[in-house]
Image (tube, rainbow, N blue to C red):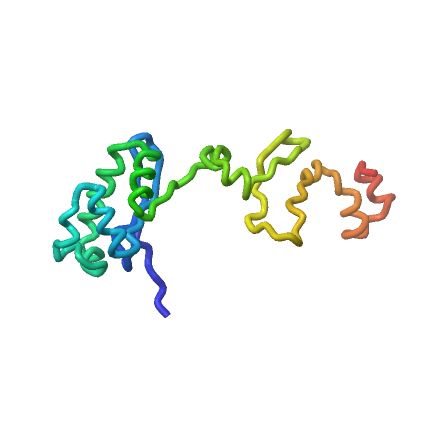
Amino acid sequence: GVIRKRSGNTQRTSSPVGVYQASDGGWLTVSGSGQGVVARLFQVIGHQNAIQDSRYSTNEARVAHDADLQKWIPDWVSSRPRTDALAILTDNGIVAGPVNTAADIVMDPHFLERTLVKVRSTFLGDALVPGAVAHLRSYAGLSYTDPPALGEHTDSVLREWLDVSEEEIGVLGRG
């Protein structure tokens, strides 16, 4: 029955959580989703003793002192390229992932295999478009057709939807 208010780059129920910019301009997200994860995160970012500090030893305490953590993590992330930061974090069992741009998505083998479909368009040529995320045996996949050309359906709309006669269409300069 409670609607959470906006909290910016953090959560009011868990800490540390956020989106951070790496030295190469790329962005990643980090989540201290459990006590063990947070202990490993503190170790990696050079604050290994913080987990024993009463200000950071429990999730509730970390939420209350989140402003400190929202300085430590960006400092660490911003000191290295995104791929390096992600590799270190994930290799240490820390919940982290990239925040992808459209360019990242179209270069990512996973997205290319699972969610993007190459289509041929009269207007666009070959294009990548979002496809179905779920892959079901009963679904044949995306069927793409170009949108109608300007005015392509005007006559049928006039006739069938607006009940305009052929004579009236002729007066309009159509038909």
